[in-house]
Length: 165
Image (cartoon, rainbow, N blue to C red; front, side):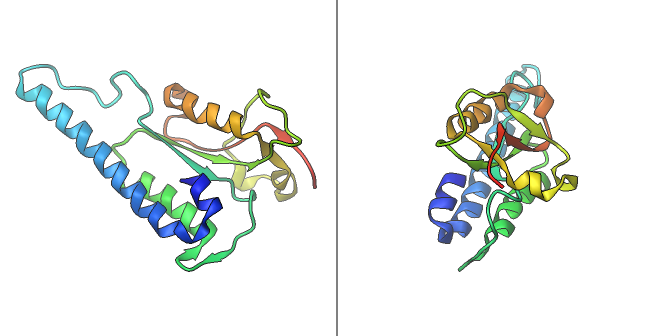
């Protein structure tokens, strides 16, 4: 969703509705699986059975882009609304929220150490605007987050390097 929203910001509302549809389907699927197991006399399936995280929401870091108005609302407000929906409307789904720094393939090498910032709201804005990540590293951490128990239930900013001003 993030990639599509940056490429076509007028699609913001579609992003929110798509997120609600995906989370609703995931929640129903998990409930049906538990119900079927109990009905067949098996043990109830724990919500944390094999994978600690069921859903990874890739969002945008607060200072990665300037805010701008779309026909359906402010860009940053739409991003934060998606995060709120995941946390508040679907609390039974194990999740993490990765707020990616600005993508940069030209001046940020690939395979750098991933940096997580859980206290991004209190950090200095100047440094935060300099954070960057290579797209391939962003994709790698989004997949790895599915099995990283340290990210369970957290919202973190993700970056690999500091560039620019």
